[in-house]
Image (cartoon, rainbow, N blue to C red; front, side, top):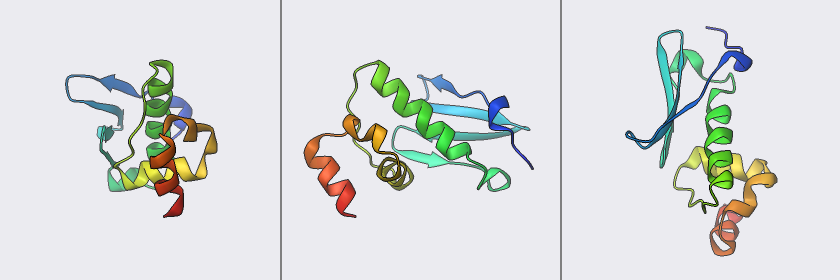
Length: 97
């Protein structure tokens, strides 16, 4: 299944404590501690879009991020523009991995 990320809308489902996107009847989501993308959608940037929306939400709402999710930790290592959302101690640990 090919995904056009411009057509993907990510919503914040506060009740379920997650950000989610429905694509072709499949649901991808990032729970506050875990990222999950259905296999047919893997490798198309859906997880990255979920991470961006969640991290942008944290920034706009002046929230600090404690990255417990391996995917989000990797994403933050690769995207230094989000590293200011992590405490100095947590950032040192994240970058040393």
